[in-house]
Length: 187
Image 1 (cartoon, helix red, strand yellow):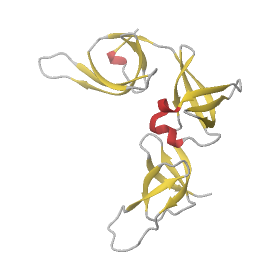
Image 2 (spheres, one colour):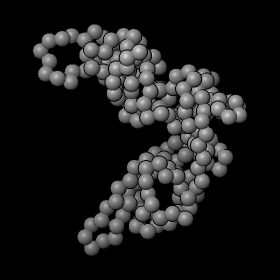
Image 3 (cartoon, helix red, strand yellow):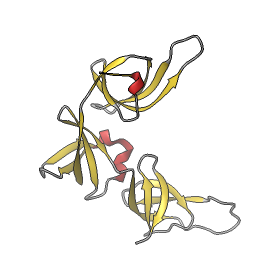
Image 4 (cartoon, rainbow, N blue to C red):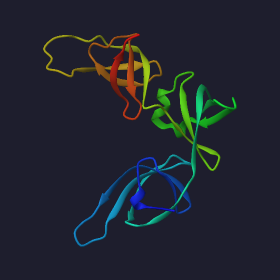
């Protein structure tokens, strides 16, 4: 059993018969009232995100979670195909459950498959990935103050803002959690 004092981002537990994962949480306490934990949760079976508040000290059943390495192979219709690194078994996972993270998948990318009760419930991508810029408008030098950006389309079809000096063919590092440019990568 776990209680609200053990909350942390990424914790998986059972709430009212649903297996949920904490995306974020905040501890609130107003004077003369009991403490409350406000959470943003994601249902692992459907991927639905919702908010819920819990009184301090509320207890839950912790769900055992295992993670196994997978390698992204290809898309087949509305499913992404991953190969288990240990058993070489192919696993089909709905692309709709990947959400915006699906735009970061490249062939042979290593990811982590999250299993709850021996059922694949989530795919965790690395914190950042290196992608090639497939198209971008040319940057114009001139009367700029600083931090000028332009739109660039990456090899996976994802469109992000990048600094003016980034051009087509450059490899850049992108944060998969925020979909933001981090740095240009030298070969």
